[in-house]
Picture 1 (cartoon, rainbow, N blue to C red):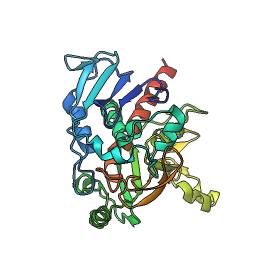
Picture 2 (picture 1 turned 30 degrees about the vertical axis):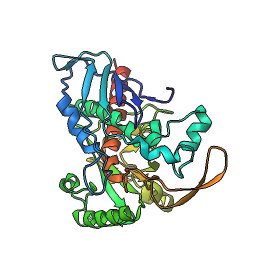
Picture 3 (picture 1 turned 120 degrees about the horizontal axis):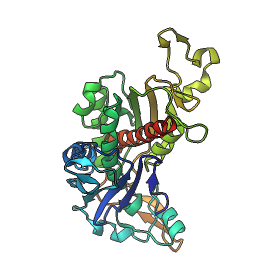
Picture 4 (picture 1 turned 30 degrees about the horizontal axis):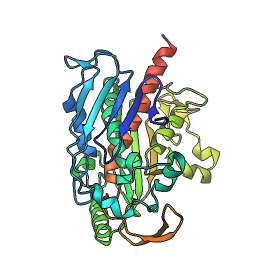
Length: 351
């Protein structure tokens, strides 16, 4: 399918639908000899999989990793690697009553207009389940990046207007919403649980910090590293906006305030978010994404059917009342893919 492939020197193609037999990814450009195990990939899959807590969908998928090509005796061969994740807990009947209705906030209408056909079961290809393949590929890119001294950490910064006031990296994986502030996390959980009982949802903000990136990564003018990161993040269905460093606050700053001064030790501030002219500075790369509220809610709404007739709609099924907790590993994975791609492109520049 056009549009399902991402990257240049490190390239992935995802496949599968939410209620199909499987989802997965084909990865090309893995460094030959890189040691890879299904268990290592599984660690990241377990962070993304459904059914983790009271604030995620109750759908149960083990997301067990199956590597079917591109590896021999525990090492990458350099040929395309295929990772398959079989679907098990589908309840397609939950969508039977609304198969001819366009769900507000979903891609039902646009997919039908583009292709003339659509899979109504759990959003088909437009489902968040498609991101499982991205996370599998990201786990492989992450291992390669870690060997270069690069670390990528994303976390929930805000949910439903509740903002983190403190930052503790140790707290992120110890609360259900993956927030960097344990006090704010408790408030977020209560809010989400309340909205879930009402059949409603909320959005939030996820921040990502990337450390250890060498200066000089980025391919001006169209493949700037921030441009590629932006494309990667906006390719995630629930993401509606992105900002780097000072971000939109820069619009209210003076040049004398926003410019990052330098001294003999390097940059004094990091309003640029670790990127200047589309090229990494060596400082921490920092960006934030806006995550929309989950579109699937059981609150009664208004829509039209495939014939253009106005109809009421209630979306049943099992859905995340907030996407933030499970989108965190997806954001990390996409950042890993962009960075690994740019490291390989930079290496070819000086080959």
